[in-house]
Amino acid sequence: MNLFLPVLALVVTMATTAFILRSRFSTSIQDIPNERSLHTRPVPRTGGIALIMGVLAAWSLQSGMLTWWLLIPLCGLFAISILDDIYNLSVKKRFLAHAIAAALLLSGCGIVMHDNWWMSPLVFLFAIWMTNLYNFMDGSDGLAGGMALFGFGAYGIAAVLAQHEGLALSSFCISASALGFLFFNFHPARIFMGDAGSIPLGFLAAGLGVWGWQHGDWSVWFPLIIFSPFIVDATVTLFKRSLRGVRITEAHREHYYQRAIQMGVGHRNVALFEYVLMFIMGGIALFVRELDFPLVAFLVCAVIYAACMFPIDARWNNKERELV
Image (cartoon, rainbow, N blue to C red; front, side, top):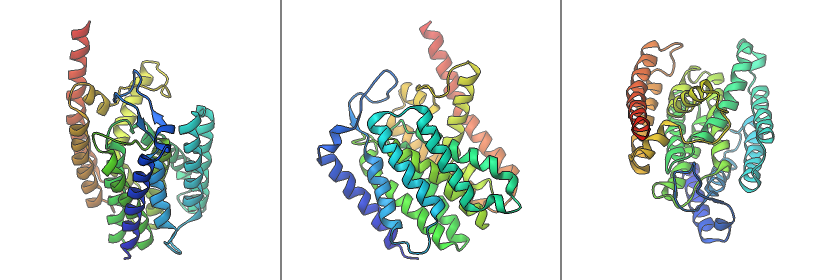
């Protein structure tokens, strides 16, 4: 396997991020703190441009291993997300772009042409959900970059075990780019990835997961377990908000990682704890990657998440009662 490509992705991301931070571009697109923010000073949100450029630079040399139904939607989402970072596009415009990307993924990967055609609606919704939830979870120093490092790293290891070199290299390039970005994004973050990074990464988490499943490299559950640190937090949080009648598209600070930071745990400790959780989930996923229904693994994951989330809920409720 040509490890030059992941190294190239790492170097390009780091060099581009350093250039952005030293240029006027770093002050043109900034994340300005508001009542929902977890940071207290303006921070450039252009790091995703460097991260995706690192991925694309490495992928451009990955001859014969790329697929149009990943590359075209990725570039489209990247461009739309840059515009969103600059102009704050409407929810309808963003959702339309996400739906088109999911449709291209679905049509290109061949699900509708095989025995698993009945999975088409689920894969379509999964791609849209992953694209958006990754953006929802990009709100703390080092969090989204860490999920990319561990998540796509696990994809790469599983692809190596399955002897799928193209998928392995594609995954390791993303993981390496995330590592390069983390040098500047770990607490205290000097730069955020913005939608230009989080939206494409969410799509790639779904796209590469479907690619590996269709190729027979892993079971359909494998991507869900790997990215469960994001999936569980975002899904449970938004489900609880919907029960209260709150719009799920409305910005907020109710995710579990956000509440932990607000309760004084801090960006650095939350990130380190999440890294441990990501590592554990990646290990579990790799161990059961070929099983059709790993019930014991699901139960273990459920216990782990319950042990993480219930104490945060209890402490948060006590905090609110004290303020009344």
